[in-house]
Length: 321
Image (tube, rainbow, N blue to C red; front, side):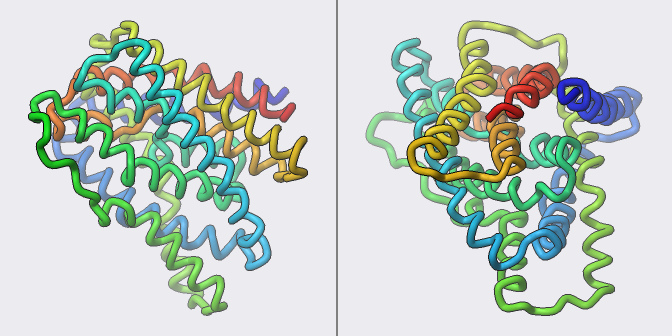
């Protein structure tokens, strides 16, 4: 039953992604539309959605209990980086691909795929649980992941300066929306109903626009260019198999050995988010570091398509955690 329910949820997502792909192919969107819609989602709609959802679904007590659950995705990220590093060494992945590969294994596309997927599978009541993974993923990507790609620049001479930490990236608008919402929640600051309603309406556009955006990205990437070389296949296994296995193992270990019992919806959210496709910004980061842009684009495209197969299987498995 769960398997077929998840398939139906995924089909809805596929149809909206397909709509974006078709409309882009028909010439409805110009070259700047994708960039504009991305900015609208990440800088306006998503912060509004997170602000409203935090105040709607979280309380001070539940906030305290959720803070402890951050340990699981954090440990999952650390273990993921260690495994990805070992794979880079064992497989002798060439410069220009190493940072991309490690990011592909560890960091997920939580905004454009993870969020709409979570809402489709579990509803808005699971959004606070989604934020636990989102915070971890954001810090992992911009505090460490970007360094791996920047320092893997094949054109950079040895001994040249390393990449600098970009604090603005560590505090993107969605995370700022979350922090502001926490302030309102902790200090019980009232929000006027008209502001709450306005933010709610704005937040409702996140899911459809995100999926349309993914369709546009897939069209621009070109489905005919998809390749399944060794480095791509191993990265896909790392993202869709190793990453969720690590998190499932940590959750099971925490429950059996330390008596840490997470609510079912939280466990399911964390595991599903750990197997979402690769970062949509991978090709951009690769281009900035003179890395293998085609490889990064191929990873984003293949993982976005294959997640359709992965999610129903994963949803069936998480029922038994």
